Image 1 (cartoon, rainbow, N blue to C red):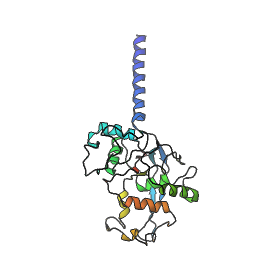
Image 2: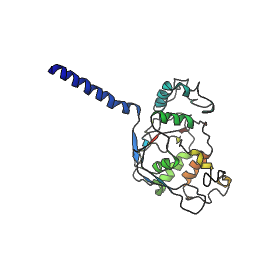
Image 3: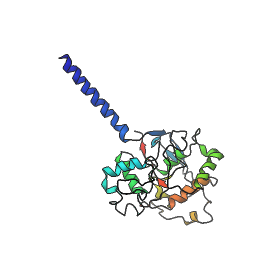
Length: 263
């Protein structure tokens, strides 16, 4: 009788251990970003339009080629030969050899690129996550190694601008190769640009229900007029980049990471 009880306890403990390991096998490490305030680069009048951002979780690293490969194995409709062209253009996963084989010089642990917004969103949702909003991403990315507001440090801003000025590399290094910021997130700058859930809001000015127009002044010589911080050159560059995108676009310099609400 005692032997049977011991065997039963062993089975229950083993099952518990297996179950406990499952989440870590499928969900990358995430870090907590504290609640804060995000002020849009452009506002439509003189009132304070700062946005309160609740605390949230964000992936410690960008999603890698290896991780996205596992996703397409389980979701055939997102393989490069099957994907609907409405959801990804012709460059989708163009650096991979075929549906399930990475390219010759593609580092499995490097950020996956040539990914559309639709594909990134589908990947995130498959893990019970989502893409970060612009406000969330900007809040996480403004931190340097020791300060949640790294933009107050001119040297930090200069480092970001230096990266922006360099041509993108086709042979990206592994994630984690750029600095760890104040929150514990790596590679927020220095490896790839990253998709956000609401990137398309960059072109729309005014209150969304009343004003769906595109503010053409943002793309002419007066583009800095009305900006909330005309010295934040990296923000101008990200604004311009997001404004050039469509949801099915892919490029070798654009990847993503996931976010999640804190329940």
